[in-house]
Length: 522
Image (tube, rainbow, N blue to C red):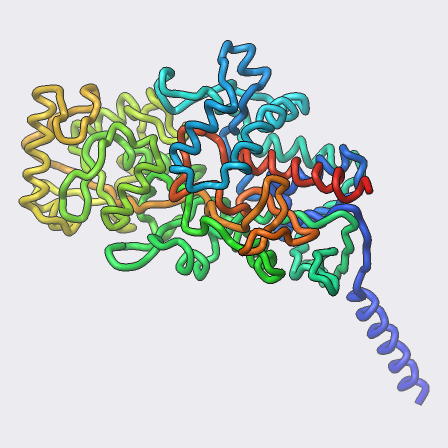
């Protein structure tokens, strides 16, 4: 009997401990931020700098997410531009951007983000983040000279912001996704509910000033992609779009759907930031074409070289010299079924192996860097099904499933263009025109379109408040980064280089500052 009583006492203690461990923690803060990427950390940093208390909830084990990867960000009116002699105004950049979007964009928000982008870059420089300088993918006469490139990509910005948020008393909860927005009887957003997925701890957090959504869009949510991105699947698409991003990626539309659940409207959901083609390698996540084996990186670089690109019928469809204009490549591939083949002969392969690529791919393999592992990469690709080798054009056409007569005619035309050093069909640069050899072997690499980011999201005003479908503010709710909707028409504007990361950083800061100014200073 005594043993039974002891067991009952122990059981009661265990049950008490378990129930206590999972008790709801009720907290209060000035600002709650949902997401710990560039926009979320920027919001948290602005909050603590402005004297507000802040809690940032991040669903992943680490901070930054896709924000660790941007090469640089837009800035207009920066000290760096002044030092380098670039005189560019907000009006010039805005005019170029809004013209690109045919005024089918939220002009007020776009101008607000550009107007404050210079301070964003200056602040990052003041935090000690090293920059490579102002770079461009365009000829100097066409560039706006606004792309401020980081020495160590966006990860350096993430580390700097994280350090200061902690130092100034900000609280960050990792592996703790927000599950629902808290509202009062009037529908005002007054806080959040969150759960620690590692330990099961539950939180109810009230926000005195407001809640800021910063969850990064929905590029990993297949259902949302199929519903909103009209060219992601459907008739004419040979393959679905692939995704680029970290292998551990939580950008599945949480914030957008939470905002929608409390009455927010959506805008621009069809738009994505298209990317250049990737090897159609089902066995390797796209990130490994960035940081995987040299053989894989070099084969991906070979895919993008300006020798010959054809579509599913064996015809050229794009100016191969403009492969770095990745949004245009994505759009052209979309118009051609979502798949392309990059074709070259043995002499072209040897040129890459001995002299390096003619054009770089995201600085993974730079011009002049010998591609000595390319043979190994092609051998692997043949086994995986994205690389092909044949002794004749007819055999190659059969292997990749295109019309042999079309492919032979296409190559004959390219040979004529190479002889005359003038491409009268698509305008490829003369220095990129090479004739194919009469004898094999010939090679083909299969590429599939990919994209960086989704660009649609919640309707907002210039104070970054969420808006209803009819344009009324959803009280207490602010939206930033890739959860913002309506800033792009149908495509990313490559001329405004680095806009996505810049808009994330700037919108996070401005949203927090607006809360402090309008809600916490009353």
